[in-house]
Image (spheres, rainbow over the protein chains, first blue to last red):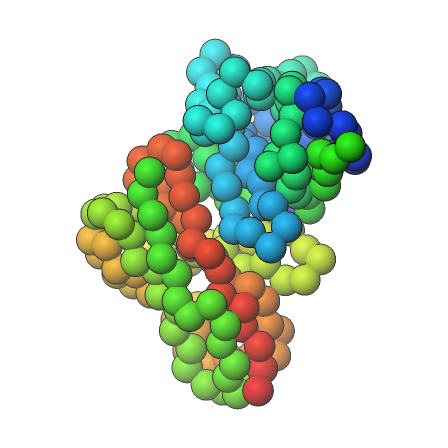
Length: 118
Length: 107
């Protein structure tokens, strides 16, 4: 069974950093591109970042370029999202998803909440 | 970015009803359209990929259709367990973009 379990969320002050992790199991992690998707409270879903199987290719939405970094450790079957210079508008539930490089994701984690507030 | 306009935002129907949810793209997305279901407190689940392909394990009462800019998710006979929010996703061009969601309840 495919499982994606996010961790690392919480409350953080504006301008600070936070790193999310996603532990994957139930499939060959290194064979699948991965992505992060977020949903702000009472708002719609937003694509954040995606990464190729090797990690050599990444894509970011404009609003997070230069602040967020998606990465992966295939040996640990773990996906990461390093978020720097956080803003209040980054407040959202962040979902780890399988797939999402050339096509939409097929599996999603339960999500982790990130709140950016002083 | 491609804008996805989803309708209706809220839908109330009876068990056994045929239900349709629509997504309209701001440009041709060449059938690169997925549908997802999200139940309260659960992770989103893929129902339909590339317009009309049923994901493994999804009941056959769910179907998808469309082309160009207009796409539809149909539930042929609504069941109580179908209470959820449904949303579409275009993956024709980056950034991939989502519809705003349809909250479906049982009347």
